[in-house]
Structures are given as structure tokens and as C-alpha cells.
Image (cartoon, rainbow, N blue to C red):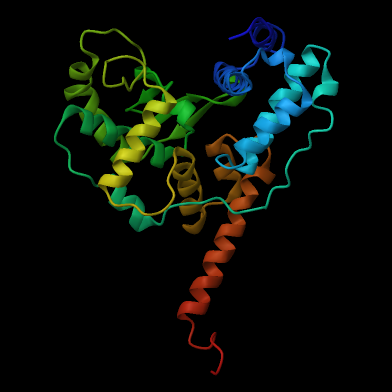
Length: 288
């Protein structure tokens, strides 16, 4: 990693006080672009960057490309070289509704066979993330004492280091209690960590580690739908809204600053209601 990137990341950490997860994301993106360029990033020309971003379009979503452009703009602005990225425009995004699993798919995903200690850990993690709608970054940073079995709540540290308390259902509490009391010590392998969910080596779980576990379970449970940790978060919110929860409560549970961010789920519910009406109402179809 070149000196120019290190200086920029230090600025983000010290001056901008960005979170560890954000800095990690910036680091990953800048290192990949620098590697693709074959030179120090600060020495790249506008044509170099355009060539790399054009190549990335084959494998990256428009949203990911725009994220890369945003990071590059900040990087070159920091080095007083904004002209390098001045004419590189963000891509237009098609507005799409968040993807989510049906309740039947969630049941299939959560009801895999429990045999090994790792199975019980994975079951505890999945039950908790679906029961609370937390982000994967929040999940992997949960400490053992953050889960309160007496109060039936979970304490999480969200974006901007904002703490929130989320109620936890009995099923998630049940499997986390079993996991903690019977299997966590086995997975730790004599390591001492505060995080609730260690990885297979008994060390702190990472977001990539959880993504790998989720992909393995997706195949094992024969889930055909698109599935990521954020899809589970969308599923949590959508199922709450379909069940009659109010939008303000869902906003608080998800930790959204702006109600408009949460409002996207109303469009999902409206589509769901419309489809149910067309499918089941005896006067909804043409020719009636």
C-alpha cells in the first residue's frame, strides 16, 4: 500500500474520525484500484482511472462503481489533485426495492440440522440477526454481555457509534443461551475474546467470515433467492411491516436516522398487497 493511501487513511481516522468499518472499506477499495493500475495511486492519470472503472463495470454493480468513484474523489481531493477525477461522473442508478426472503424461505434457512458446535453458533447468529434486523457489522461486534437474557434485549453500537437497545424474541434467546452455555467455550479453543461469536479459529468473527457462513447455509438449505446479510435485515423489516408494525417503530429498531430511509419498505408492502389482491380476490381479474 503506497504512502499516498496511508496518509489519506490516517486523515480519515484522525481528522474525520471515521469508523473502523468505513476505513476498512476505503482501504480495500483503494488497494484494489492501485493494484489494477500497476502504479502508485497518486500517480494515476484520469485515463488510468477511467480504464479501471470501465473494466469494473463487468463485475461490479453501478452502486459499487459509484462508491469507488466517491472514494477516489475524496482521495484526490485530499492530495489537492481533484482535477484527476473531476470529469468522472457517477452512474445513474435504477431505483429498485430492497430484496427480501419470504417467511417460508426464512424458516427453511433457520431450520437446518444442528450437529456440531459450529452449527449451534451459526443457528444463534442467524436467529439473532433475523430477530433484530441488525447489520452484519453490528452482529460481529456484539459482546457477550450485550445480550441481556433477563430483559430480553440486545445492545448494539450502530453507525456513528450510536447505541440502541433492541428487543429480542424468545426463539433467538433460547438458541443463544444454548450456544453460550454449551458450545461457545469449545469454539474459543482457549482464546479470550469478548465478542459473542468467535470464528472457526476461536478469534473475532469478520463480516467476510459471516458472509461465507451465510453462503454455505444458502446452498445447504437450497435457498434460490438472492441472499446477503442485508437481505436478512430487509426481511426483518418487511415481515414486521406486513405483520402490522408501524414505520416509526421499525425505524428505531433498524437505527435509521431518517424516516425516509425506512419508508422504502412501504413500497414493498404495497406491492405485496396488490399481488395478493390480484391473486386471491374473486373480482380482481379481467373477464369477471
